[in-house]
Amino acid sequence: MVNDGRRDNDRFIPALRFHWLTPLFDVVAAVAVRDRAIKRRVLRSAAIASGEDVLDVGCGTGTLAVAAARVGFDEGRSTALPYADASFDVVLSTLFFHHLPDDAKRQTAAELVRVLRRGGRLVVGNLGRPQDPLMRLAVRGTVQLLDGVATTALGVRGELPDLLAEAGLHGVTVRDRVRTPTGTYEIVSGGR
Image 1 (cartoon, rainbow, N blue to C red):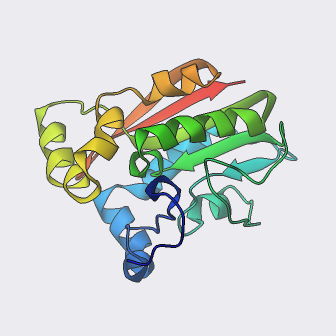
Image 2: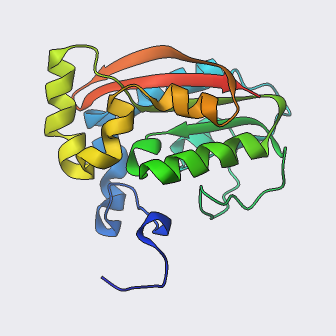
């Protein structure tokens, strides 16, 4: 591993964790995580209106941004977004938060609130609290095995809504849950 001077928390995390696996991301996510179903539910919950400014954080291969009909891409860190305060009406994120260490999750949540306009909304589709013992086994044997228990624990405990509320969002709620071969994914929304 090359040390580029950044702390581990600042390191870029490619889709499927390794650059060489990125070309397989969309196929793997479609089967293992029911990615399309999660993204459809995120978009439905976001109810994006014509003319709204939308940010997709942790966009992976960009399929959610394309589905939201927003196709401009900028590169940056979720913990220090390259946008002015109150730049967006809607902020979306799917399959991203569970890759971050807890301190980076908190920094990212604060950044999402910062760039969200008053009256704006955040919708996140991410690993969540298992619905039953089968989903607990699924997440333990897949996502937690690959991404680590410490990194994924906050989501598996069902604490992402609390983290988003602590960052300053109001009305944070789990709007939907999706059963997948890799565990339970939750659609969480809140407003500013």
